[in-house]
Length: 228
Image 1 (tube, rainbow, N blue to C red):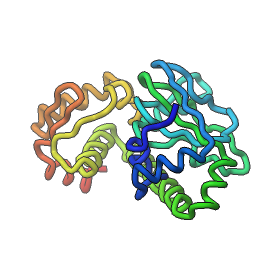
Image 2: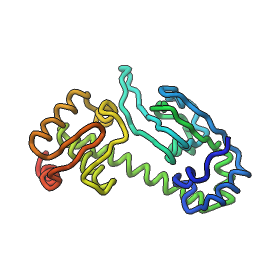
Image 3: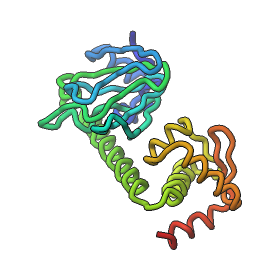
Image 4: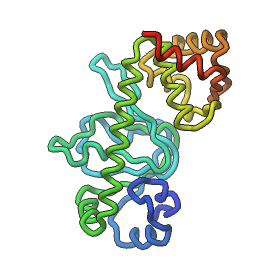
């Protein structure tokens, strides 16, 4: 199956290319496309990382397992986002986390050797790849900042303020469940729900379903500056 060039335009690797240019590129590329039902394992921790994945449809979840058997959600990836680029060219190129289908999804895979060939022929693609790595590093740093923010309230508020800044609105739409959000903050779902209820009682937020509205962003920002 040939991917839709319009979808690949959303991928940083192909950014700046027209649909026609991507279509022509696909005609000379070596790649595979796989479909996965919900909850299907896509990549297991410890697998050889020898290919780049691009989400064409649906959403995937990246989880890091603990020796105790529990796990923490590292990221949720959706259409146009990439899988495995951070470790593809490491000396020890093994998959560091488990990747599963959060819903029915479709993934395009490009092998390491093919990527090197593309980078040699098109330095703009190499530049986009490096930019993608840089953006992913920034996201990891933000994740660390959230998890090291201290109390659960600080982690929740910090996350909401970050999302408001990214989505450029006071009315945030989350693309994942409350359970996944709790895992992202390294807490239990009941604890997250209790904290959200307290913030609503304070008049700082309102929420319904996957939507959260910041009612007092100024107070939330002040809390992050003063509370430890």
